[in-house]
Image (cartoon, rainbow, N blue to C red; front, side):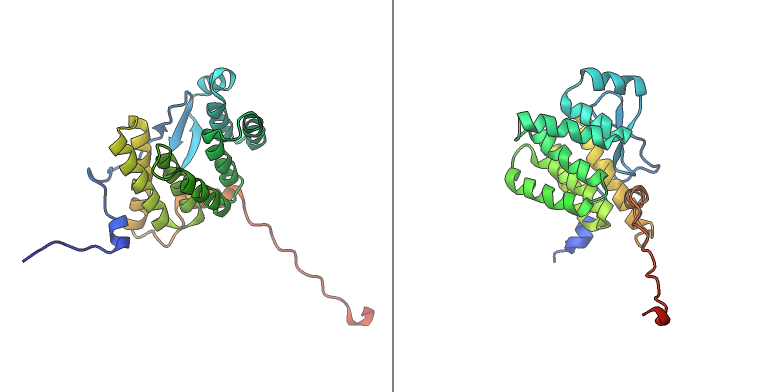
Length: 219
């Protein structure tokens, strides 16, 4: 008699990856860009070495410069650099992805998801799929859909592992997946994930002004 356990799709998404979960929160992870590391809890890049980051801004590739600017919160400068680069090379893949990062950083995760899904349709089953799955994970978690985020990070992890990607890329997918699983498996699933809470804090909803009541005598 077979004793295999048949998991639902949701249960499969929430399975702990091979190797288990770290017992302590992950420290920021190398991004491959000098001076910048990925915070897997907030799912944002952060400046880890200001001097190295400034060197990257002066001498690095345009895509690396954009990541530094995003990490510094300089969205206007990042947007201008993306626009300038895409004017010369409209199909520059890195800039097309970073353009969606700008959308997310500006507080519109749902629009970033739509744009990333369109890119995924274009680049499905290519070497570019893993990074699109990773960025979709970021956007889904920020939008509050943790199951979708876990699904995307797991796909990115599987793709990067199978392709023998650089260790920091595999580690970033694994750490982000673990962040989502740790949040859902500790009974905190009803509370916003830290990445979603941080995104909301950066872009609070505008207050609704009360509608003044008109004096009937003046009506």
